[in-house]
Amino acid sequence: MAWFNLRRGSTQRASNDPTGDEAIPPLRVLAARHGLHIGAAVSEKHLREDPGYREILAREFNMVTCENAMKFGPLRPSRETFAFDAADSIVAFAQEHDMAVRGHTLIWHMMLPQWFRNAGLSYDEAIDVIRGHIHTVTRHYAGRLAAWDVVNEAFEDDGSWRETPFLKMLGPDYLSMAFHWAHEGDPHAKLFYNDFSADEINAKSDAIYEVLRELISQGTPVHGVGFQMHVNLENPPRPKSVAKNMKRFADLGLEVQVTEMDVALDVPATKRDLAEEARLYGDIMEACLGTKAFSAFVTWGVTDRYSWIPLQFHGKGAPLLFDDEGRPKPAYFAVREALQKELKTVPT
Ligand code: XIL
Image (cartoon, rainbow, N blue to C red; front, top):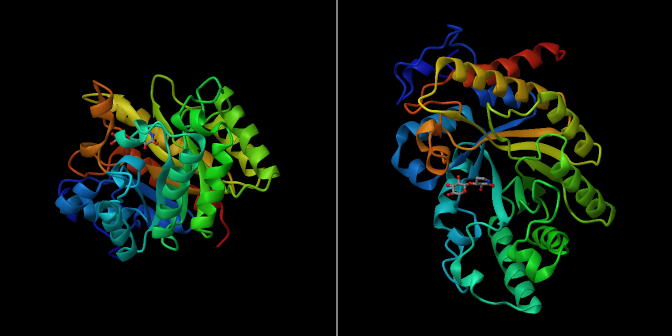
């Protein structure tokens, strides 16, 4: 069955599938058998300009996240205007290729527009602007998105509240307000809290756990928690702790997702590091598959070429499942194997 042919892909003619088995279906087909979405963060520019990128995305993934296009800054050139075009074209691509979309993100302290930072809003004005933003954006995409990261990165690593403009203007209630407003705008999207370095059991995930538990007990429409999983080999997450952490959130009735996985390697990456990276990807996927409420696994980009890691962290790179040329890396095969291994335990 010609599901796909890795050697025939438009940018990756030289790919080598070490299993030698080209009849194995792509990741999205394997993931679907688990009822799982497998996704990638996507940039509108690369989607428009690079046919190889489009081909890999449509072939391997059944979910997309806009890497930047749905953030406050990119969506709001001014207080009066919304710029939906870039995000709209990503959503249209997803719909054409039968992919789900994760909305990312409504409330985040980064990539805020200058006009918002400089506005000096009072409590009432802040409510007006932030509620207006959330309502307009969630209504614009209502019915087309599977999930929204409503609030991103509200806590510090020690578990304290991050001093964001939202905390300063509205106090800790902004969390609950944001979820209510998002739910008003799109009652069908699953609403997530999303953060980094909360993948394991630690002070940060403890704080998030307590706050989400409290929100749920108050009837706040929060449905899931996203673990970003931006990791490296120096201090890799321990799969057992990740599984245990996911389980406690799942026990609150929440969906759990890996929302932004990448593994920052020293570049140029050695064979050994690529193998370690593969092992980590495979182990994390396996750990996640053990949690029933685990519903999506998203990598923060499609190929290494366009990853944010080398731009943000000097000397680091090679964090994703596909290399600069779009060839599947050992990490790809490890994720594939994890998806297949689990299947063997599922009665057919
Ligand atoms: C990053 C993007 O990848 C970059 O292109 C941008 O310059 C900054 O933001 N956590 C998140 C993501 O939730 O939105 C961030 O994305 C990476 C860290």
